[in-house]
Image (tube, rainbow, N blue to C red):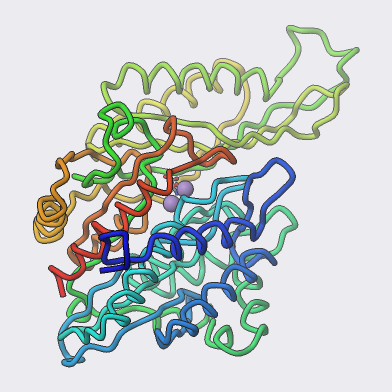
Length: 426
Ligand code: HGY
Ligand code: MN
Ligand code: MN
């Protein structure tokens, strides 16, 4: 136990790491921006590698840029326990989303090591490359490569065509990052297959995450166990009308792409509201040519549809697609819908859920089970291993925002639950 706190982990040290990492990529509004392989993400990766090195956790990076620390088990042939999350962020996001899960993994491994415990099986912490997809609109890159959720050839093709706003491809960004040398040298988008692990190599994957919702807060609880994670369907939509002079083209002669999109947005909202459980979001809209005195000729927007029920989500997507085509036909504009990513919902594994619940009981804390509306690397890992997640209370449910916050006490308890869970699974 750590002196004075009654905890097996060192909460002060963890909090200090969390606040230090939160300064990397911090902008004027207090939000953190570390998108994959940008300069701040590289700095954060270096910070994490140093932390792992200092703790003697034998760090390494794989071909996909996933960062690992580890304690080698007495029996290296036994499947390992993996604890993880991500350190990339959305644009102007918070300090906790992802980073907290990774740093708790580091803290748990550090604590195990300091107590002189050498487990039977290997335990690793992983920071997955690009969970958020904020720079290239392509998410879950590291967990997809590691789990082999899609073939490495397909992933490489996707990364070659995924572009950031400057037209820089994912593949180029990875190659550039590999030139940092040292641990980074292993990054190789042409060898992503080497980052893929076999099912037999991992016993379970555990992820701690800020809840990003208000369930725990409303129940006055600091931590909870996740029952399942909602899957998602992501697409890009292009509506093409006719650009023209804002002063000369009469209202009845126009094929305004943006007004068509206006109608589409309301239809999307209504379909999701009436679905009985799906949520649908258009979070990014680009208007072309984008001039105040020109009728918009083309609009590109993103579509994000989530639901814990795969069947209901796909029905919602079908209805949305039909509505977009119908509205476009009525307005004489073209509509192209390009689905680019799909992840099925994943239920947590009884093996990990039971271990988490036993940890709660050991700590004499009430058990609260709740679903996750947000996506996580855990759902991708669900394709290859047993998964489970622990949620930490999120102040006001605010997330993907500079004000995102979990208290010191809640973070400490979350990490303590993770420690006890890990020990049960080892
Ligand atoms: O979009 C999500 O649910 C996650 O935060 N990446
Ligand atoms: Mn997020
Ligand atoms: Mn996250």
